[in-house]
Length: 308
Image (tube, rainbow, N blue to C red; front, top):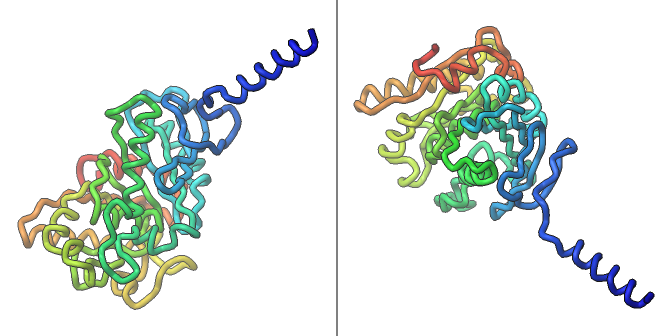
């Protein structure tokens, strides 16, 4: 009797341990997991770690009554506080009926050359493979989220603030992510559509395949919005005040306006399409939460004409 009972208990325990893993449990606050299964996102806040060659943690907010029509990527600043950006984007998720995705690009694995500048260059200055660019994670994450939510045609938008704005703006110069629109909010430095500025500030010094006229033409045709706070017009502890940066302007507002004006001028000069928009948030300083909450944010993401 007892040996048989022990055997049955052992078989039961073995079956429990070898059961197919369940989808990530999102009942608590944030939850770290492996690659989640299809349909695993529940309403509210959560987080998942996606194995995309490199593990990328994404902080997520899913509105309770989400229609499944919009996804919004929110790109953090230099503090790499993706969880806070997700939290501060929750009102946008509810307001715009959007699934919020805030990927974290930590400083250890993604220093400025890999984050703000996208990792498009190797250490020797040669062009890195596009599949190795940090920018390439965005369409991969979008694909993973579409699969998880069983929404293969799910459209997505991108908004990045400060360092995230730099990431978003430069990404528009080198990669078509498939986003409906990319919003660069208050970037510290801008990618000017010219080879007269070295890379970081322009296309100068890059390999030809990353800086030729066709590359710049496609950049000007990208669905990019420069979203600027009109009070973000002065130096602060995070603003790059190097010679190359000051040449773009003394504040983020001035630099963004100059980039837009130059873009429009270059497009007009060559007869190229120009799809950028300029939207300003009146009186807003360098504060992502205020930029997200401002009524102009909706125009920056979804508006159809400049400044509307």
